[in-house]
Length: 242
Image 1 (cartoon, rainbow, N blue to C red):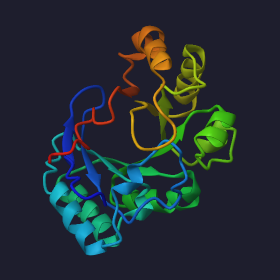
Image 2: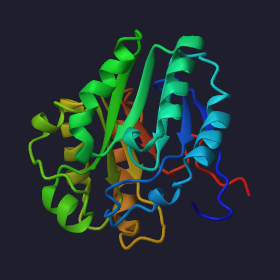
Image 3: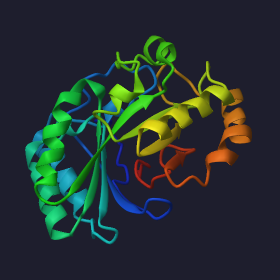
């Protein structure tokens, strides 16, 4: 875990698909090869410390929208067992009817059983994949995402929602719109993340971001099945409080 990083870990998303959101801590992404993401740094092998952080974040959940999104620096498999049990208890106590989790493609075979464990409680469990783009060459040769499947229909057999990364070199308005349309065709919801500067090799491309803002954003900004994060803290979590 990064010293001095004390992010906001609970927020309420009030637009489009209203829900509460928590940013929890796990023992770290098992892939860790993506050339654009330093999110894995928000992790720790200290399971008890992770649980205490997660417990505090989850204590703010009210159930006002009966829907909760759980994000962490990796996949739901990286969260400790006590945190998962606490989440399940909160779902019952706060009458959460729908819950969202993240998962890397490498853990896809664990998705079905995990979803069923919530469905047995009467809670719909939605799993989001960080796909980033349907452009296989860009995704696997540049971003090093670790998703060897090219067919979106097959990917959608495991996942309900996807994240797309836009605003990087190699993209155009046409390719970004193609990603969005493909995402909407095969998945329930799409979250677009505009690339922001961090310590990793892949950087934001100002020209591509300008093209997104001028040609893509106006078309999709009001689509209720799309979340668009122009900054990676737009959901209200992740901003450092120190």
